[in-house]
Image 1 (cartoon, rainbow, N blue to C red):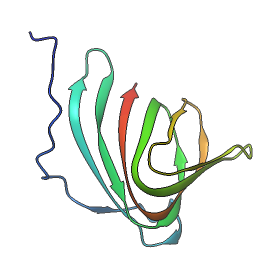
Image 2: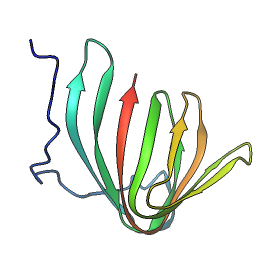
Image 3: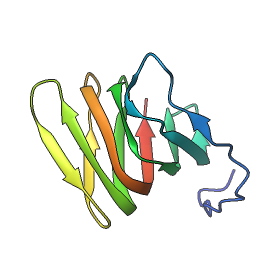
Image 4: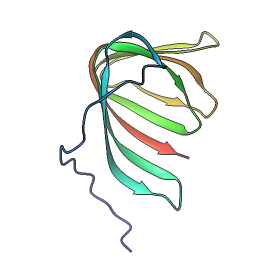
Length: 114
């Protein structure tokens, strides 16, 4: 087994609507591309894109995020708020609940640990 992986996107991921029960505003669509997965270690990495809108989120996993383009606001139910744009990086920890709002169409890279 190799210990080195090149992460290359093939553009095959499909756009999906945000689930109606989570939707707060707009008609956002998202697209997730998994570029790396190691299920034995609970690790995955990839790219995510979204159009403008706002919806509820609840995390059971740990996620590192780096914004590539666009802008968003992630706000916890506890009032903690992060406004992020290109080059900004943040972590969302398990147990986080709140909202994700895409202000302008965006793309992020991510690493998740289950």
